[in-house]
Amino acid sequence: MKLRNVFSKEDCLKVVLTLTGCLMIGLAGTVVAQQANADSVLTLLCKGVVVDAESGSPLSYASVLVTGTNRATVTNAEGEFSLRMPASYSHTKLMVSYMGYQNAYVTVGDFLNGKNRLRLKMIAVPLPEVNVVFKNAETLIQAMLNKRKENYVEEPTLMTAFYRETIRKRRTYVGLLESVVDVYKFPYSSERNDMASLFKVRKSTDYSKLDTIVFKLMGGPYNTLFSDVMKAPENLLTDNVFENYTFSFDRSTMLDDRQVYVLNFKQRPHLTEPLYYGKLFIDAQTLALVSAVYDLNLERRELSNNLFIRKRPLNAKVNVMKARYTVNYLNRGSEWYLGYSRVELDVSVNWKRRLFNTNYESVMEMAVTDWTRNFRQDEFNAKNRLKPNVIVSDEVDGFTDGDFWGQSNVIEPDKSIEVAISKIRKHLKNRK
Image (cartoon, rainbow, N blue to C red; front, side, top):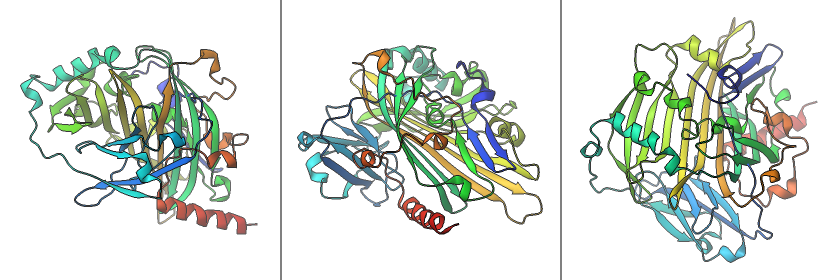
């Protein structure tokens, strides 16, 4: 599988688990970040929870956009969201969208008194089938790829993004990191790698005091940018896409009141190289990819492990149990922007002469909250620029700022994470 980045697949897709105590995981990625100028006064905190209107179940990773602006966020696993904005926005509308549901609009001022519940209604109207327009799924995929330069941003863009890492060992969360990332994103037609730099970071654990074996994530925000399918489609769809994958139509759906074609894809059974399987969501009007959810095929365990594991203990076997990617794009006028990306990675460590395995579950997610084209290229902070194999948790010193975190738009952690982190802090204080 060809990666056009200057980093080889062996450099980007690696993990480390050493006997002296470190499990590091790196995924292919290319991120971009640059923070837009913050508003001088941020006085409104808008918080809410998005749920299904009938069942009341939370809608995870729904898009929340402040209309008329570039401010946006996504809901967390509990359907919760949080946004800070100037007081002048109190009468502005929020647009909340989720695949297969009707858009909802609510005034910012209605959400200022704590968490408010917003119920989205599922779309139940019959939709025309995609194969009325396209004879086969391959034709639709080719049309999507052909219109990539037309549909996505073709000017350098400076983005503000919030990046978050969580690591769970068995049922206990042992790591939580949040950071503001500056993203310099090159045009989607450019073969240059997007760049990322840190602006603010905070973490809630000290990995070295939690276990003799420590799980760390290599790559930081670059991992989440790897799932930006339209920036480097060959990372997912490969150069020989139709030779490597089979495509099939699924039932169409709706997003932002627009019809969306749904395609299933999976690698052909005779191939030995670990590729992917999942769903692509394509806007019927523009033929732009608006969302993708896909997993790495782990059937050939040894080959898939080699993509992630760089070093491992001599007395243990390490297996990757899940590698799942999600990417969502936002529509602004005639162009589509990266809005949210997420990587879920599960690893099992099977120790010799031990009855139970050690299981780690990690989530890396990044939400783009603002972007601009009106900037000077030299504004990008080269001093704090990240390397693709960076361990962000080791770079925190010098970026922590307690006052800052009280005034920022942060992806809300799950309630269970908050409880677990609180217990870990108390545990660390009591240790000698």
